[in-house]
Length: 161
Image (cartoon, rainbow, N blue to C red; front, side, top):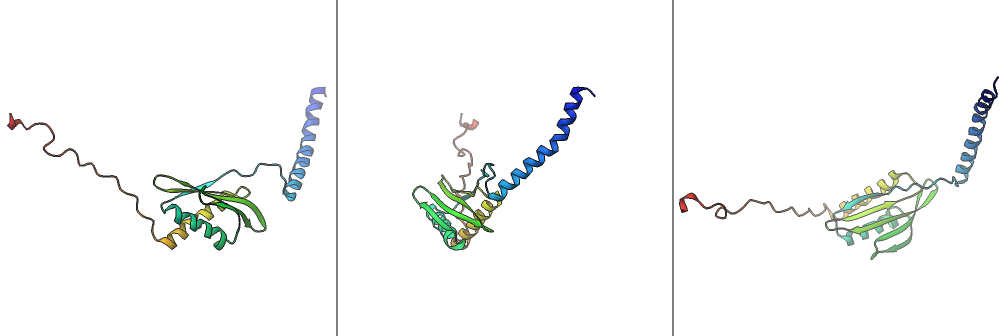
């Protein structure tokens, strides 16, 4: 057998061993909670058509009362709530941010150690709670309909010459 073929064969035989060792190391890290992998960076949002005060108060009550979670820090003026999200014995720091827009309040939820469906569930509960407590959101003002120029403000009538 040629030396190059022997080397290739040795590498092929060693690959499963190396891969198995790596998988064992990853599994041990996962069991200890220190995988070395970055946390999920996704964030979900929805646009609330309710007022800032209504959205803020409802979000705070949702986190503190309805979900029974610990609020770590909050600032109404800056528009954020930091809390500890818990599910099935696992805890993660989490946040809700409220950003004022022209026509709505954007609510952003981040729960880094959990899949994004947890963020979506929190935002869905917030939207439902807003509707239950304040009714349907106020309708967006409709843009004025352009009916065109007034009848006398166009081309001069040919009869007026």
